[in-house]
Length: 114
Image 1: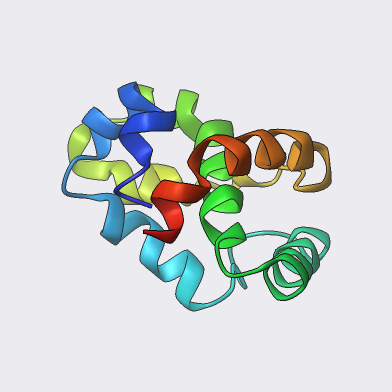
Image 2 (image 1 turned 90 degrees about the vertical axis):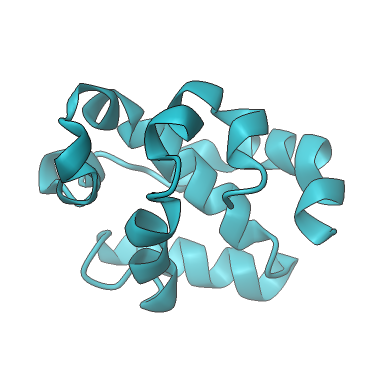
């Protein structure tokens, strides 16, 4: 994710430089349990099992894109706390971002799979 974040979300990449792992790793390691609502967790598991592990990257990028306004306003020392803000995460809708994920896959698959 850190490798393609500058390509897809450059402003957020600069902000999260060095902190991407701290913010994203817990989400992915627990398959977004205790992060997103059940419908989004099911969407994540279904996408990654049915379409491949690279969909973890596209899913996470759309989630970061969704919460970027909150992250961009947060003080640098509290990025992880801001990323896990219930208010920001509860409005994420994975199903609505599938067209964006497909576009990301078309642009980034080579870099993701490298």
